[in-house]
Length: 224
Image (cartoon, rainbow, N blue to C red; front, top):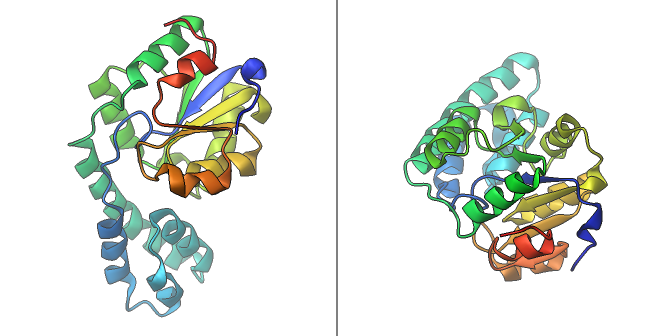
């Protein structure tokens, strides 16, 4: 599960679970949305969903018209913003995050952020961590129509960096991040310290499956 990092010209990070610890209350957020849409006739297929991104994306696809789609998005974004805010109040840096970001910055490597978290929480945590000038490009939930694992956000991030998919390493913490990278065609490294465990991610065969972010300094041949 390794790939040649010699061709890597840029690095894109997921946010929660990757550079900050995993604090988002997925079951509670999904339950709150489903409670609100339970009486919507067209939304019944969504009631079996347990994944927040799937619920979001399928709601858009199933909405019978623009009015219902807007109604759904207004609801789900309001709920997800609440849970973003809750997570922001508890987020802390993941082990190795500060060192890796500093090493990439010192090397002059373009760095980007692509997350399903909303813009307000994203900017809040970057300011809190002192990373508000670290990233060349940031793409949040508010800049896309569909969430990861749909490839829209990651594709947009790569394009804004001015690079090709094969020139970018995507770093995440979940099966969603692996699936997104594979759809886009870029190598992916995941650290099993966030949303999913090593056992859960191993069958998807990421290029690098790590215990933390620390080994990436050596893998990317960066100076400490």
